[in-house]
Image (cartoon, rainbow, N blue to C red; front, side, top):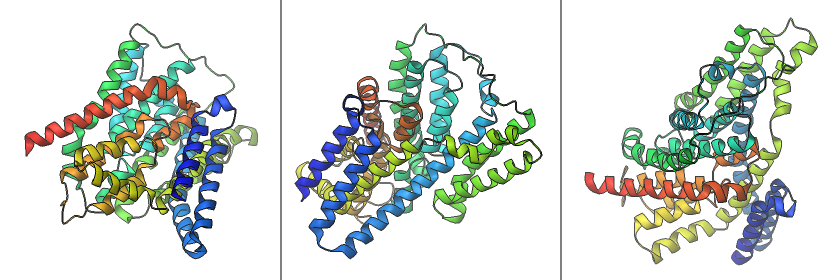
Length: 425
C-alpha cells in the first residue's frame, strides 16, 4: 500500500508541476490525487470508522486554513475596492526596481513576523499589483514576497504555523526563538534579495495606467476601510493569544465587523454605486481555484500522514543519518514538497522534551528549517500557494528562476544558525 500511495502522490505532484505543458489545471490534479490517496488508504485499512475519523480530523484542520484564507482574501478585496492601497502607494515615489524590491522585502519580512506569512503574502502581492504594471516584473516581486514572508514568519511564535505548533507544544519560548532565529531568517532573505536586486540594476518601474472605470471613493471611506481592514488583520494574532481560539475564528469575526461597517457606510447610496463596494461583491472576486487547489494538496498530504509515511520517514532519517543538524536540514528541504505541518508534527512525536528541553538546538533549528524550506518550491508553503493563485505563478517558472535562489538563502541561514549556536554555547 505504501508504495502505491507514494506513486500516486508523485504522479499527482508531477501533474501539478507540469500544469501548463499537459493542459490540466493544477486544482484538478490535486483533487484527483487526494481522492485516489484516500480511496486507496480506506480500501487497504478495512476500518471505515478509523479512516472516517482521520478524514474528519484532516478536513477540520484544512477547513481552518481555508476559512482563514477566504477571510483574508475577502478583506483585501474590500480594501482594494475602496482604493485603500492608495494610502500606501501614494507614499512610494521611487521608480527604481532595486529600491522598491528592498523596500517590499523588508516590509514583508517584519510584517510577517507580526501577522503571519499567509496574510502578509496576500496583502503584499495585492499591493505590488497596484504598483507594477509589467507582469514579468510582478512575478519576480511576488516570488521574493514569498521568501520574505516565510523568512519573517519563522522567527516569531505567531508568524508561521509550525513555530506556533512548537510554541504551543512547549518546545520553544517567544523571546528565545526571536533571539535565536532573527539573524538566520534575515540571511535567508538577504541572499536571494541581493542576487535578484543585482539583476534588476538600471531597471525602472513602468507606471500603471489609471483605470477610470473604478468607482470614485470618498477619501474618508477609503481611509476607514483601509485602516479597519488592516487593523483586523493585525488583531488576529492578538485575538488568538487572548482567546486561544484558532486564527480563522478571529478573521471571520473581523470579516463580520468589516461587512457591517461597509453596510452602514454605503446604505444611502444607489445600488449601482454601492454594489462594487460591498463585501458581497468582494466575495465574487476571490480566486476560488487557488482555494480548491489548497484543499486538494493538504488532503493529499494528510493521507500520507495518516498512513504513517511521514513518521516512518522521520524515523528512517534518524536511524540512517543520526546527525540532528543534517536531519533537520533535510526535513526543511522536504517541506518544499510535503506540507511542513505534518512533518513538524512527526518530528515533535519523535523527540521528547525530556531528551531535548525547551529552546534546545533541535527545536529552534526545526522552526527555522520548516518555516523557510517551503520557499524553495512555490507549492511548498501556504504563502507560496496564495501567491501562486493571486499572480498565476507557474510551478516550473518558479523552480527555474527562484528555487535555486531560495535554496541558497535557506542553506546560508542554516549555516548562520549552526555557527551562531556553536559560538554561544
